[in-house]
Image (cartoon, rainbow, N blue to C red; front, side, top):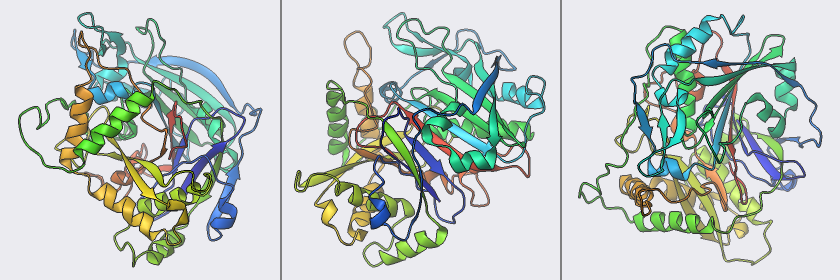
Length: 470
């Protein structure tokens, strides 16, 4: 298991998530901005540091650009509306990079891979559409007009193995094509980009970028997986579904009891108010922690008496939260807070192929976290917090986002969902994902050729502020 961390440095950054398949446990991903202290506090963990360089060697060279369109035209007048949650995520972007050991394409311009991509895009009208303002209320929506997806082709002047051994977070972002949504006319701006990167010796990296207003990491992963299934001429397991999240049990007058609904809504309200005082975006460096399967097993066993049901996510969140708390000024505050993000596709009556955002952020605060000698107590608190989240809390949060409409029908301004507290996202829902056989994490089932599955997958989130993200 790989864990990539971020710390303040002099170069600009995009927080990075890294997942490796070499473990029987669920992949748990955390990203933070401090790491040098772990040389002494984590003697049993192997640490690999890749400090960001001031001047990146330009190993990635863009060779051409084209547009991929759907194979079947969308019905005229088709519109995709955003949910309140989608609107709130508008400041962020999502970037996913799939690495393959063997060469996938001959010439993408004429290759069947491009034909299969067009067939896949026919199932995803918002992907090839354009984000525009609605005339009636000025709200954002997607005009599904088959304008197409931008596709960039690039070469990388090194082998795949050398790249994975030496790349840092900033250089890895060169494998994705992206520019933020313009403030003015966005009718020609493509909300999705794919960059196909060919390495020396045959390796390939497929980088997908999109607006977080359109999709979350799971949704982006399913798009690439659907493309792979189309190429193999197999049925798409998780067809995209455009569920209406505004029709919650609360709006239908049903009473779903959950003790956390008030605190959840208050947390989002506080985050939206904090956006009125922007934080300074810190520049980051990166480090990669490699956790062997045996180390994870031993660490879970060490805290078994305190938290017998702890998952790897609980373990790693507790470990780094407790250590990072040591960096803060002693007794500067009695409570330390951690923002936890989970995907609720498997917890609500939604299609697993739900298109858009299905993320829930919540706040966990504990006193004197840095003084805990046995971080099993912290892991138990993380586990209890995550497992206590029920359907009522998720629906209540969605209702809060839908209630943010101002006079005239527009939603309130988006705000940064990641931060300002230390934030960790659980990716454990991608293990044992419905419809997946063989106990493979979801991202590793994006197999274009039977013997050529991803060897590595990286996730980045753009425009993050605060203490860190993972």
